[in-house]
Image (cartoon, helix red, strand yellow):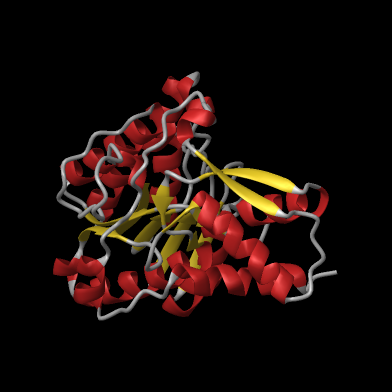
Length: 298
């Protein structure tokens, strides 16, 4: 199998380099491109030319416009990257007979209620980012190409900056932290997303009827405040000296942002688990594994 990987230097893309390798040849093309062409989703025409040149059996699109707040002031750019480019990839995938793996988000929902969202639930994004990601999904489905659309949430990785590193840095200097407690979801590791993606791509290559839209997130749920408390408690058990004495809960209304956030980001992943024979691990497992790596690094 020849796989074209777009966005290879992002959180998920970096892990996909490793996870996809056993499937065959992986051609990783970043935004600037190199010998294999342009991987810039803001230039859909050049992007399609790159795909045709590589002629892959599968396209894994780990690139996206993910600056949720900035998207409110850059809707055209977010639309071009998250929707127009997704449609262009889908059209060329259909022409080549390739499978397109594309990542979407819990932000396609309005965040109401308390039940985990199922794939067929009505969508209703609250912000530009969510609307453009939903438009990208629809463009892929409308194209008729073979595809796997994987909606995920609260993505993190040990590499680069993230919520965990921020909490550890603040907790080292401050006695009191305030963290949002009314947004609920499942912290999901880029490593888990990449490993499951590779499994799904391999399985769907043998059984094309397994294609479609799936939810992919770690099991369980917590708030950002609960997440922060877990991080701090685990760090202390591992011997980390922290100044923080209190992690206080606040509401979303107490911390206004340019883009509205959904309160309920729970995703029901039972369709994916049934279809592919998987059991997704608790969110704590991946977070603690990442924390161990961070804390053991000088």
